[in-house]
Length: 459
Image (tube, rainbow, N blue to C red; front, side, top):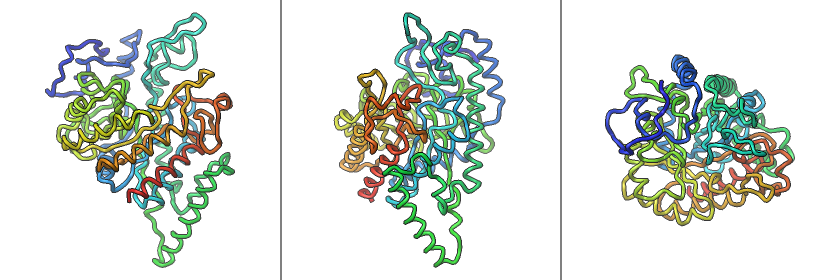
C-alpha cells in the first residue's frame, strides 16, 4: 500500500469504487511517515488480521438507526475524545461502560423508547488537528494526532508518526471489544441489577441520587411484572454495545475494509459505525471517496460552514440509494449559531427527500480556552445547544434521533459548570484529556436527564 496522494484534480466521480480509489483524491489530516517501507509492512500485516466486528452486527446497527430516524428509538453515542493506549484497562473500560449504561437507562425509562448504545470506543485513536506542528520553548515538533499515530509526550521520538502504533491500536481495540462482549454476555448489562453500574466515587452526588431513585422505580416495576407473569424477563439480561470512531486515518481504515461471504459490497470491519469529521468532508476529498463505497452505516459531522446545497451534494454522494439508516448527520454548530444554521439544512433534506438520521453533537461547537489557557467547555452551553436542537427539529417537523457526547467515567474536571459548579480554576485539579475536554459522571448524567425530558415532550 502506497502513501496517499496530496493533490487531485478535485473532480468527484461516481465511477467504479474500490478501497483504494480514495488515493486519487486530496487526503487531509493524514500523517507523514518517514519510512514508506515500514508503513507498508505494517499495513500488510494489519490486512491479514481477523476483523474486529462482523457484517451482521453492522447490518443490525443499520436497522436500528433506520428505526431511530423514524422516532422509534433513540441513539446515545458517547465516550472518550481520544482513547489512550495506556488507559486500555479493566477499570477504564468498566467505568465508561457504566456511565453509558446509566445514561441509557435514564433515557429508556423516561422516554419509554429503546435506546441504541453507540460507544466512542475500541478505535477512537486518531484526532484531526488545526496545525501540523506544535512549538514549546523554541522547539517545534509534529503535533500530537492521537495514539494510533504518535504519542503526546513532547520529544522527537514520541512525536514521530510510528507505523507500529497502528498495530497497537488494533490490538487495544480487539482487547476492549472482547472485554465489552464478555461483560454484556455475562450479566453486567442485566437490567435486573442496574445497581451494579454504580461508580463508587460518585455515590454522594445529586445526579447519583436521582439515578438511584429511578433504579428503585425500575426494580419495583420489574418485580411486579415478573410476579404477574410468573417468569423472568430474560430479554433484559443483556444489551448490545456498538462501536464507533472517526474514520480519519485512511490507510488504517483501508486495511480493515473487506468483502464478506454472502453479502454484496465492502465492509469496514474495524468498527460498526465510522464517521467523517467536519474538517475532512470535502465533496471531492479522499474521505468522502472512501466512505461512499463501504456498506457500514456512517456519520457525517456538519458544522457552521456547511451550506444547504453542499449538504445535498454530499448526502447524494454518500447515500445514492437513499437507504434508511445508512447516513447520520451529526450537527455541531455551537449554542450561539445553531438557530441560524440548522433550520435551513433540515429544510434542504426534506426538500431533497433524503433519508437521514439527525444527531446533535453539542460538544465540539462549544469549546473555548479559559483564561488560564486550558481548553474547556461549559455545561450550560452544551445544554443550550441540545435544547435548541430539540426545539428546532420539533418546529421543522423533523426528528432529533441521537446525541453525540464526549464523556468519561473518570472523575475528571475538564468541563466547567454542571451540578458541582466547576469553575475555571478547578480545571487543573483533574484535567486528563490530551485533546478535548470531556463531561465527567455528574455532568453526563445531568445531560441524560435533560435529554430524557425532551424525549418525553416528543412522545
